[in-house]
Image (cartoon, rainbow, N blue to C red; front, side, top):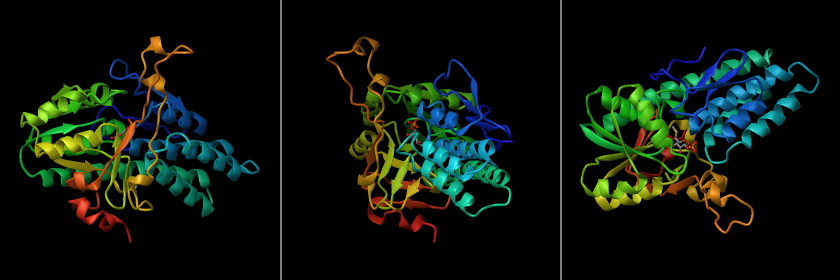
Length: 345
Ligand SMILES: CSC[C@@H](O)[C@@H](O)C(=O)COP(=O)(O)O
C-alpha cells in the first residue's frame, strides 16, 4: 500500500484503514509500530516524535486527514469535524513547513467537494507519499552530481528514509554517492539532545550496508580542522525565499565552522520544504521543546534551581550555504541569488 523505500524498515505504512507509525523514540533497540485510526492519534505521534523529520511529518498528517474523513463522513457537519482535526494536526509541531503544506493540499481538495471525499483524500495522501520518495531519489542524484567526485561527508540529525517518504534527502545524496562508489566515508553527528544521529542515522545507514562513523557534536570542529571533510550535507525544515534554512539545532554552528575550514555546505530538501511567503529566515518559528528532554532526572523536581533552554532548530543564513538541491533543480550560492528561481510559476 505504501510506496516502496530503499530502506527495509519504513517510517510510515498506510494499511488502507489505519496508519502504522514506526516508533522512532525506541530505535535502534526496538522496532515497533503503533497503529493509528484517528487524526488525534496521528497528531500525538507527531508531537511526541514517534514520527519526525519534515517530509514524514507532512505525509503522516495527510494520512491523519484521511483517517478523520473516514471517521466523520458522512455524518452531519462532517466537514466541520474534519476541519477541527486538521487544526489539531497543524498544532502538533511548528517549524517544519511540510506539515502545513500537506494540510493545505488536503484542505484544498476538501474545498473542491469531491464526490467521494474519503477516496479522493486517500489518493492525495498516497500521492504526497509517493511523490516525496520520487523527489528524494531525484535530489539524491542531483546532489551526487554536484559533488561530482569521491568525497567524505558529514551529516547532522537524521534526514534519511526515516524522516521522509523513503530514501531520504541528505541521506539520499549520501546513498547516491555510495551507489556510485564515490562515498569515501560518512560521519554522523550524534545530534544532541534527541540523538537523531546516534540512534537513527547510523542505524539507518547500517541497514543499507553503508558504513558510518559517529562523532560527538563537539568533535565536528576538530574533524574539519583535520582536513577530512569535503562536504556537510543536511536536510531542512523550512527554507525562506532568500535561501535561509531552518534545520536541526546545531546546523548553524556546523555552517559557521565549515566557512572557517573551507568545507562546502549542501542542503537537500523537496519543494514542500520551501516557504516563499517568508522573505528570510527571521520569520520562521523555532520550536522550543520541553526542558525535560534535556535535563537529567535529578533536576526535574519542583523548586529545582536548574532549568534548560531547548530550541530544537536554528536558522543558517543563506550566505553560509554553497548549494540548495531539490527535485526541481539546484541553486548554488543562494546567499547571492536566493531561491526564487525554484518557485513554481
Ligand atoms: C529530511 S528531514 C529534514 C529535517 O526535518 C531534519 O534535518 C530535522 O531537523 C528533523 O528534526 P526532528 O526534530 O527530528 O523532526
